[in-house]
Amino acid sequence: MADFKIKRFPKSRIATNDVCAIGLKRHHIVALIEVDVSESWQKIKQYKKEGNKVSFTAWLVKMISNSIRDYENVAAYLQGKRTPIIFNDINISMAVEKDLNGQKVPMPLIIEKTNERSIESIQEEIDEAKNQNLTGKDIVLHRKSNKLERFYYILPGSIRRLFWRYLISHPHFAYGKMGNVAITSVGMMGRADGWFIPISVHPICFGIGRISKKPIVVNDKIEIREMLKMTVLLDHDVVDGGQMIRFISSLTGNIEKGWTPDP
Image 1 (cartoon, rainbow, N blue to C red):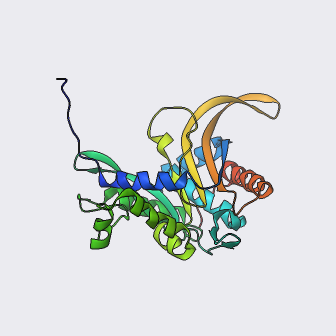
Image 2: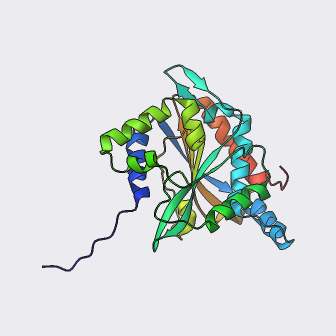
Image 3: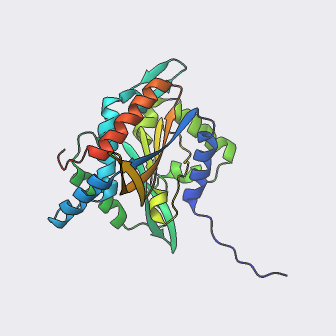
């Protein structure tokens, strides 16, 4: 008989599988874009040299928030079939990779009101989440689990997914539990150069790839620039194609030129 070993399946993976099953049924339009971050990246590095603590991730969260603020429909939930619900604040869901019982496990973090927060404030919350000690009793909602949440994991998959269907069909409930924007930066954890397409139950989701150098034509001259690969998922049920294009254009411009350390 061949040798093998059995590893315990992390509870967080159960919820991830459920999200993927529901997310595949959403009408997301996928945009694969490449953004020149050369100038902003250099300014971030200089800002850090001056003693300020800020990461590219925290800065990107702020730039995305600024862009959505001007195109609020892209983060709207659909109530019923014809009523978009637009929340005034932008609450962003992202994963923080942590060591849990010797395994790397992505634990969700909700950063609230990023449209009002400074980059430094966003960075502080990310750092706090990374440094928080977790045990096997901590699960998907980034806090100590209660009895109802622990009960979730022993339910059959078909019953668990009813919860997610209920969640996304009730905008206020969904917004309170998981925000209205998702950001996943799996591509920045390794050296693989390319786009990846995430699966999400959020109205809008950003898949962040890695920054790589490549020759680009700038003012009719070839220059080596630092380019960020990004995937954007937009819910076609609440946003039409024209508005998607205008949002992507605004997002690209904000990332390329929108450096600001201010709130």
